[in-house]
Length: 389
Ligand SMILES: *Cc1c(COP(=O)(O)O)cnc(C)c1O
Image (cartoon, rainbow, N blue to C red):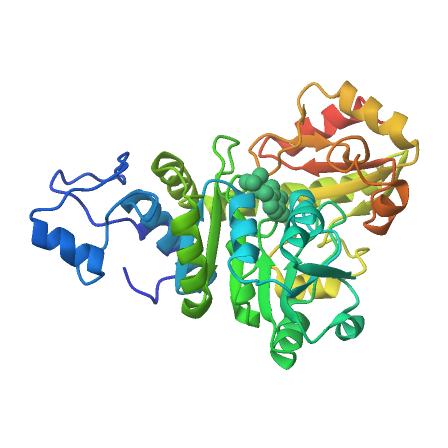
């Protein structure tokens, strides 16, 4: 496999070396540990001078294959796979901060990331400040001498606000901050934060990467320097991904580009259609010309992604009516599936926030998040039609 191949080719052909059985599709190494031909070979491996596979908490061929693909797709040299997206997000922060450090994060980070920043890291003396994702000109006012990291997510969940990655990269370089991006919503097919100087990119592979709602997984990919610390942290604290999940996700990456093209096409069609429906107020989608950051979206994303959010004039009652009337679309909190999923953030994923906190991240009572699946668009529209108005 050549480094000159496109990302799609590498996601398909970036398979581990064939074994003696000449298999075509990649094999699954469901084993916790590995053996050694001699005591000396074992000693060499432990000393770090031999071929490194020892134990699946450290590495495993099925997991390494997935990590290598993720690195190729993101354009970053080193990685580690975790049991869930939150395992990756937590490791990306915990491995890099020390007592007294300060983190800058864009508001409207993923719910559990918010919990890590507000409830967990403060126990170890690490503080944070939120800045507005769409106002980079204000970010510098929140910097302190002890600020170490800039953490961001774009597009945001569920508001679908974008962070200008180029501006963020320049900001991090100017202030010598490590630049960390949760690239789950966009996937490396739609956007590559490393192009703008990201030091570390995290993923919930549970979402579009698996794309079929089967397994949990997380990925960390970054520069050699940053990943050295992150891999050390992960190897000794144990968030490793199961080889089985790695095998499932690695197979899924073979079709990521095809699925994302289709998800994005359907999501754009749904966004346009929703704008014309009675009872539907604002529709949020990065590739709708009405999105306040439409030009930025076109600059840094290949397409708008698979998530559309929209506000129903009738508030909570209208949102619950829409969800209850659906017979094809499913009520679930997941996203990034072949099946279209409807979520009502105000009463579920974001119900613990106060009304003011929800307003600050753009979650009105009538906001519905739709993860657009791969069913026929006409069928999705007919299903929503039953619950509108
Ligand atoms: C789902 C999600 C996560 C967490 O991933 P899990 O695999 O559920 O642990 C983190 N960030 C974003 C943006 C997500 O959508």
